[in-house]
Length: 260
Image: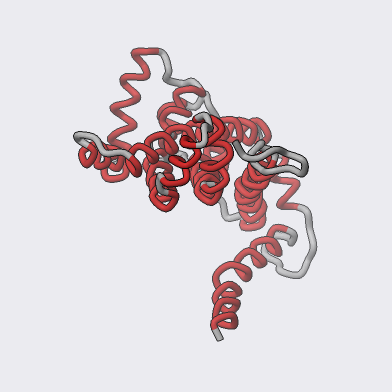
């Protein structure tokens, strides 16, 4: 019964909308039966589409890497260590989610103009950390709470270095947290339109800045093709990151010596 309910819900809210979107992207405007590549031709004829896609991938990559580094370190400290002001620090990390992002962006924009980071890719990367880092810290904190300290203490007792403990114990056990951070961070970064346009000043053109103006168009076929292109990028980024994750040297291989 639960499986049937799951597939009914999946069909209604996931599979059917995606199927309709794909069908609409391969038909003529105003028709559901006439096959046409009009939408995809219009998509690839869009000015700066490929440039914007490359820029979005580059920004998303660096934002994701920084989120993993900051989220892991801060999440581990909040989960496993006790220090003065821990509650205040924990609350401070959540503040970017409670304060309107535009208020933060305008204040940061003035500072970036003074130090020369306005209208640059680096400035856009930094502002994308504001809505993403709090989620990463929360995800990794929960991961380290579940992991605990016992296995790390055992590794230290057996003489493992901090790096060996991280790659052989922490990283494989935190794989679900890392995957969640990768996907969530990239999706949030990819969809930022307002803060990117403010900090980037129109110089840094991402896919969101090309995509959102199309929403005012009545051409549903072109919008459907653009939506699929927009949605496929996070999936490809996630799959690529998963393939790279498999290459990391934490898995035990045949003929390898003991762990430590």
